Length: 247
Image 1: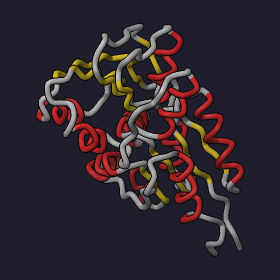
Image 2: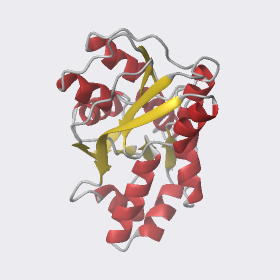
Image 3: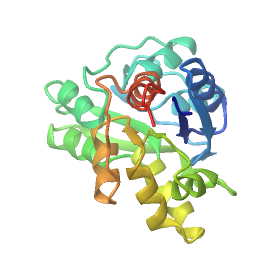
Image 4: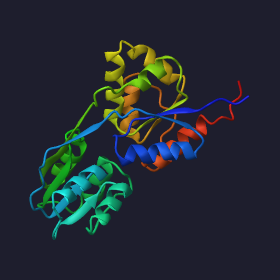
């Protein structure tokens, strides 16, 4: 006897959530969409710099909407989704690290940014690893906060399901989605029950920083994909929780 595989996904309520739901459905899972992030644009754009570092597709889209372009700067994107969005905006992407993380960006740039001005344009929840690492490499770093990430009103139905052992999987795509999930659970008085429920399910984290955050809060992470993309994450979670399990 097989069982249903209900997988919670926490992406912002835009095309990313729609694509995630479509992907999970194509994998034979039942998507449980519960956006844990809302995007609040600041309207800011980075100043001119020798290097511009972009760390998200959202940031690219906001800059493109504002009419910004990298000009003569060396454009660095944290991973393939960000790079694809930049190319779609008509920009030339010069560098993408092998490891799609702040640490990967530092490894990529540390030997070439000494004495250079580097603009880092991202959300208000960016890691200090990137700024500190580039400064340690001798760069003059300026951060521009393009958008703030907040917890959407009404988020948290997945926390109720987790507490009730009604989830077979969950896909966390950032440390902030972990933290906001727990905030939403706490607001319902379900934090401990929700964590226990997740620990009976298959929990996926998109990368090591997200895994570290989840585990620091007592959430057991079962899978982390080699490639930090939602598709790779979802495939691993569904494969591990697939309806080949028998009651």
